[in-house]
Image 1 (cartoon, rainbow, N blue to C red):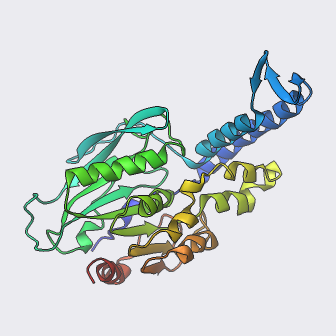
Image 2 (image 1 turned 120 degrees about the horizontal axis):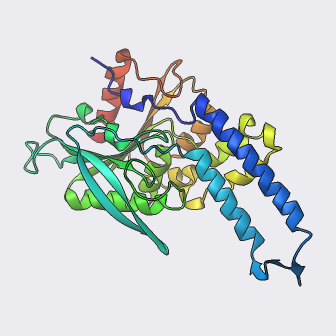
Image 3 (image 1 turned 180 degrees about the horizontal axis):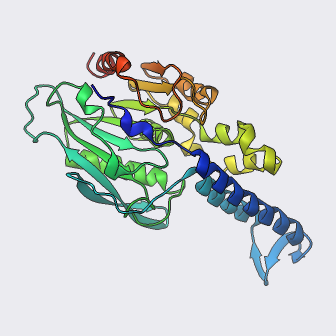
Length: 326
């Protein structure tokens, strides 16, 4: 049987992308530091900074810059056309403070609303990794549950991905997640919700667990973005630790470790045993913080995007059915 985890093959911060983004980031940091030094000698009146006669808040401006750099570092949005095959498209509106926008979800409808199972049916909501697209999301892990027990499987394209409007940003993701969960719930009332996340998508899944009350989680290589950026040598050596400043732009509501502590639902974690992109210690921070019943399946020797070998399918099925069915 072909591995059901092949949809997890996209990697976060692939080696080609690292060079491009880090080069861009280095240039931007030089501009930021140089501008800050020059600006410190001009237009300061009564301890307030002025630009062309208008007062500005330097701390706020610096945080906005850090937020933009964080978004460029974390997201790998694509907008090329992808054949969705037999998937159904849903457009969802969201509001984020004073801003508003829309994003798309693509879904597989597996059985009719009258379903053949006597159990409360499941709906699956998926958050792909940074390079993933909803148009390519499979129906996994629906095949691991009893036939007829899953009504549909939906995946989210955040703003900036596919034909979702706007730009990808950490600031809009909480509203996107809440609205995605609400839309799935309105389409399928009186169902149980399984939220899945892959790599960066685990941040969104954990936010959903802490704030939207799903019934279960399935995570592949979850990690803490703030600790990864601030603690990984490769993100800091060339900028004298300025990446730690960027890491501080990860908001508290998206803190994966804090949200894991608020996750009280059953959770299965699939972990690559030899992950070169997200070292195991950054994943362990999240896994150890989970408050609910959880089990981890480690794929020995696997790198970040390696699929699960067929020999481990039996173990996968046993764990997910034990957690979701009992």
